[in-house]
Length: 427
Image 1: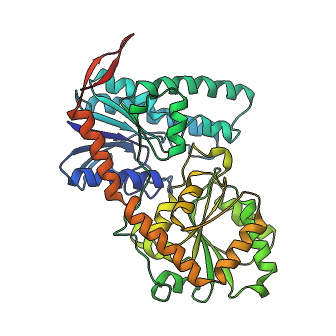
Image 2: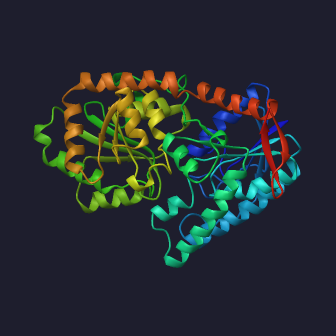
């Protein structure tokens, strides 16, 4: 039996879905599992990259398939890129999959499980969906396309729902996402919650005075508000900009200078830079994605981190950056739904604050209150580190995956499903 994972990006790519998959794949391979990856030859942050078509990495067999390269700039080109990946990945899966294998499809590109599951079942393999987001609801919430496209999305949702119900397992990353799947008719015993994670041994707090990145970026004397990772359409920036303007206006009232540090990229990253220039804001600093080996330093460069999610996307996405922030021993300020997934975690563990979207004045007040109370800031950071070690470490997540694999291969067998196909009968 082997495990076959499908996702558009994999090591050495630095995108969040790639890092999660890489952590899991390498860890499972180290435990003696046969692991294969079907992915693209591209990198999220470098459209010109052309990674090797086939290689072994840390015991993992990597198959990188051909795709078109129109990029993310327009919807039509992106659709073609997705389509070519679907075709190439399905053909490669047909060649690799054997009876008893477990095929795990992530959600980049969207609805990848709809493509991979029929191939897996035809080859006698188990089909598992690993949902990092829920499409097409994400597209509908973001208002992608017009009314005609909305009808297409509704059709895709019906196709997707059938695929979720027929899968042997659906792994989701939050409680609200699990509730959504139950409401779509997915049986409870085919839903497992495994939150995203971080490696608490490699991501550790770095003291401010001993952080070379903080020094090289000229942040030593400032109170630094960080944002690390992708800044995309799921994230609203006006609340940030309003708060930044307010802290600059009230700079004389702050205990120390406040600097806003944005590290990463994404669809809204350049928009944030342009808006800051247009509004003549002077306390922002932008840095590119940092290598993973510097993640402890880059996350520790900030005194507090921002995490955001548009309220309409709750239950569809969970910002994975929260877990790295916690591991680095820094508090988080969540901007979004006060009842959302990250807001609940912050309240549960006492590791930060929550501010509703469009409340720039409240975000500014929260930042200034933490800048004036470093002891409170440090306590929240320690609480986050404790929570990360206890519940969000990669080893805990890997154990949950091991339990799912054991359940599927050791306590279940296939029986014919009504109307054709297969289903799992628990023994």
